[in-house]
Length: 270
Image (cartoon, rainbow, N blue to C red):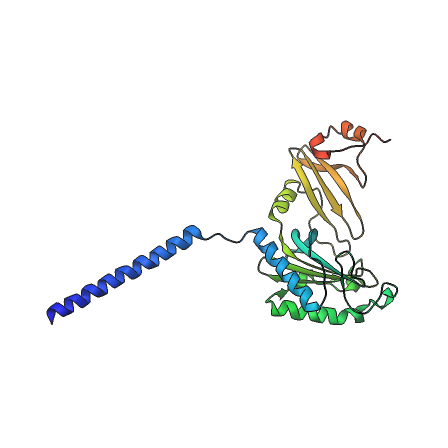
């Protein structure tokens, strides 16, 4: 009996040691092999959600890359997004998904009433996909300078936006992606150049294309339209030294001592 008991105790001890070894071995393997999701991973997941959303809405819309969307955080800061989008309209050309029975000749029918089912179906899809509605990114057309209806949804780091504009064609746009960390870093380098605080009466956003020493190149977008800009840092403060929608004049670039690596191309005015 004593021998049998000793064997049982020895067996229990061995099993305990084996369990501890497996436990620590598994933890070590997880710690050394686990790689946290990257921004690109979230962007790819967002693209999958867009494809599912288009299917849920019954449209054949082409999902395309888009970087000119912004997210408003709880502090009212405008954060740059990177990701993909698809468009909805009255015709199925150039990748636009045709939604509803309204034709391009009757855009007066693209109203709040027309959007009701689209908004309801979109909300149902995002709820089923475990997204949460975000109030900072939701607006009604009466409170928007472009009379656009906006909705925002998020699932962790994945951000999705819906934009519907009455009497327009295309009238709808869906976006899913994530905050662009690299772009955010570039924007912080030119802090003070443009406002990053959300203004409900004048929605604007900017992107930095290149930053090199005391010079930067980028784009600025307003409610309607935008332009390319070049900025220079003087005495610790960034200032726009050129902006426009055309190729800059070579004389302007020379006067501002702007390096060619920033403006890339210029015009002689001919």
